[in-house]
Length: 206
Image (cartoon, rainbow, N blue to C red; front, side):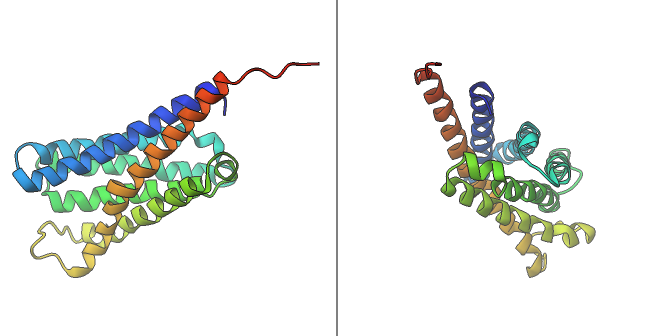
């Protein structure tokens, strides 16, 4: 990856992390003071999905083998995450069912995240700690797939939801906490590497 593309990818990764973290802060603020922060959180979740899809597409050439299926998982997941946000913003469903839908979407992104951070490209280009954090984020996000039965049953009441459905919400810890940390860390590292490459003197040719 050349310096310009590395810097652009780094900026996109930082945008993913900042938006996802901001969305999490809005959710916490909503529970503390109510107001419009719930809707802002929903919009932030959709934006996180879209930006994640763009990041997966930008890095599609860095995966080999089943790269098409893996990138497809991220793109479909991004679309499902947007649908989840649209359901609650439009009033079609309550926040609980919409959260189940979005959680399944982010699970698809989590599958891509695990594959990306275990790829030969990542091993060669990124520090082991960044890759480990990315894998951890992806595994946690993948828990969202456990929400599928709740969607099929159209569970939309947090107070009466069965205990097993909450397993899918483990994925939100990955989406709101670990994934943003990975994205921002990676983005800063890539931007710094690109800057150092520009500042370093050119090697003289014989």
